[in-house]
Length: 522
Image 1 (tube, rainbow, N blue to C red):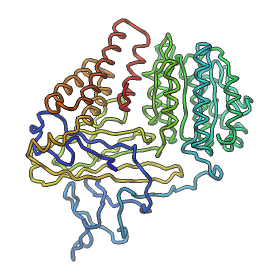
Image 2: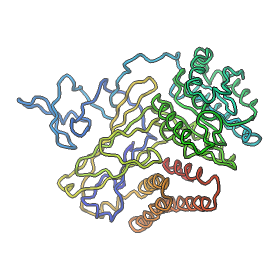
Image 3: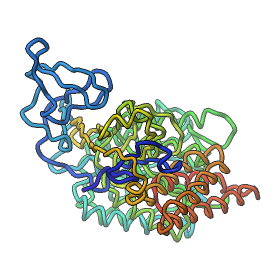
Image 4: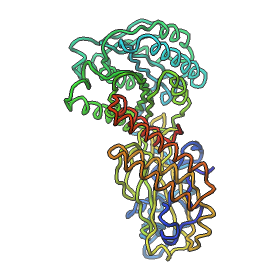
């Protein structure tokens, strides 16, 4: 199981010049991340200086004057240990778990709140005809799959147009928000929170037992008027809090133009609303995914993308032919945990240059700094670039530690550590022999996705430059070359559409950046 790998295998260059400006890249992939028994109850022992977690009892020593201590392998700090805090065994991959301070709400035997789902569907006028028919078909197919793989999961359904409606499995509208209430955040929250059906019945709506009823209800949906997207997201958040659901799926084809969060004017309030609601969702441990259906107008995805970006969800911008594939990818993406954070710990002989994969926005990250990534699912991977400093030659081996902290479906705080030692080498041949061009190409695409948000040409140049470097350093790495070429061509097409003034160009840029960060090939 290779959860963490490096572009130079198990080697690290004694000088950055050895690889002629090809970056030293590490990647942490969660596709094979598994739960392992043997975790330690309580907090890990942490270096007081750099934050590295003690992962081996062999590092613990005893001194008559100092007492029990360990010398940090990353910064050489001497850390005194209270013997009662030292466990009898450490398995860093199984990790540590900290039970919640307050008892969690009991949703009933077998209810899988972490894998539950609330679907929020746009049924405004622009969704009529083939679009709505395609959404119905794809949603029903997803629910059938969900009812088999997550039969005990809770499911809820919200539709929105000029009104927001919440449905029971048999098609009854159990709550409706309309008129002036659509513009009042507190009124929406209070109305949903007080609803007796949501409080008492929704926690019992397990998809395996109600699939047939939901299918009939979805088939009967019809398109109506405007697009009250913001109020619908607020309603979904409050519903999720009542049942502990882990995921909201938002489907829309048009710009929010009704109620709070309206994006139909140049006012900044709408954009600020989606960032605020995204932060609330993330704080609550709720993930939001968006499937945007391409049409004639703009969805203002640059603003809406904050919802999946901050919560750790996914974003798709598709036509009708791609709709079912996007649903399938979302349904098959297993959730590991919520409120996830990671830390990259490296010794002072290494410089942490960039971290990618946590979103489409560029953000400088320092070693040991908490990186919030929201929901942690198996489709995620985090890449990071390291740069050797001159004094790295003093070491024979260099350690790298990734700390992963998240909440499981029972609200236990879990801390797990992935660690690897790299052998320092001055032999260029050793590095070239183990060079992983695919990993480097994937990291470059992730970096380009971050950069092209503000500078399209620079994003393209990043990929072209790396393509040329890999062609020289790894001429047989055809797949990596092709991957970069396809992404460059895709960006060229979108830049051309942007130049021609196409209204969908900005949405395509945003969705493409999200796809690139996820390393989903076109």
